[in-house]
Image 1 (tube, rainbow, N blue to C red):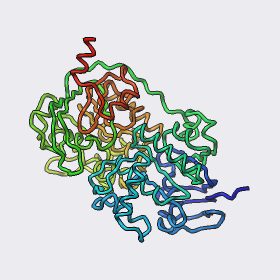
Image 2 (cartoon, rainbow, N blue to C red):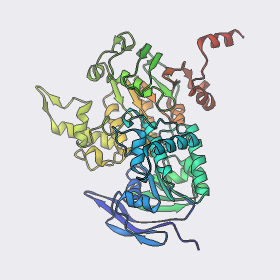
Image 3 (tube, one colour):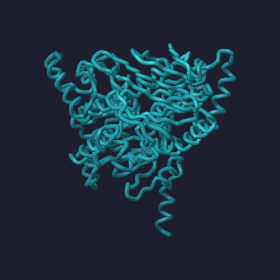
Image 4 (spheres, rainbow, N blue to C red):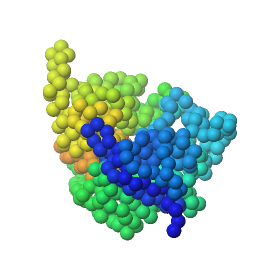
Length: 509
């Protein structure tokens, strides 16, 4: 029999108050794409970090190519031929793309050669990126591309991918899968974490399912349905989303001819954007990351107040030059795409993170009612099924999906009149994604105006009443969800939407 490339036996990892991995065994064969499934907080990322040497197990044995190994750090893992693409990126903000990639490669290489290799890989795999750009100017989707290219340049024998497609468009996912299938055919093994069950069934021939830090099953995902995989993951099928046609009311958000030069030399200028979001409707914005979504979110949230006064109105009032708190006073609540650092302060407790956007527990001359604050945080934890060691747990101690649930829940529980959310279910398991989408529709049905920016087309088609597409800093006309198709939206992502003049000619014909 062929010797397994990787074999884990009895892997256990404990943290204060939680056992992340409990007696886990896993076998990975050469040239195999092996999925690791589980709900948020099931222990998937911890297990991958143990294999990559970023975390040390408390118990258990790791065999690599038939030999017992103690992988002390990621540098040793890379020397063994193991590379990893993290869900939360490990990039230095102040360095360029090329410099970040260079850090993980053979030091005998010159930076110019690394830059050339990045450009070649990016072109080969359809992962468009400029090697000279500083990382702090990149969107989340662009950072994802850097991580993938960096891993591929190491020519790995084992490639670990933690939610690699969470912020990629369907077209980019297709291109990435061509690459991954080619790698597997050449003998590279994959460990693949994803909550997108259709991806796992397409790519992987084996699957280990975790629940609560333990292995609950091993299967061939090609022989399973979404429903059976969901039952293995969460013990039940996710609730079906009940979409009902909306009856929009008054305009809550009006964007009128918004043009804004990016204050970032590598950013995207916004050009003549027009959009309305009414009470009781969900408007979705699709598009490839890096086409102006970040600049638009900054302008709408109040982080960027340089727009003309007439460009943004909330509840009929000019808001373009108001800061975030003044906009919250008008009923706007906002969820950014960056969880740690923008949506939450990593080192603060969940209770204290409530204070970033919620002031109900602040009384009189600034006294904070801590019991009330903790009750608020506990309420979000319970309602949104956040796996955390209570309101005192730090934000950085949560898994990515659980932190996302907390941040979304914090803003939804504020009962906003206008709710703007970017990438609402990025890295969230199927059950939690269904809950978040259901809560968004419940907000809409309660009369809230909702704007969703997402690179998950399936998600936008599931919850939106109308759709726009963003490309090259411009915004397409809106189209009713019922009239839109995935193929059409994909075309529009390249900026190929009809102009008003073309629409007029079409109507006359």
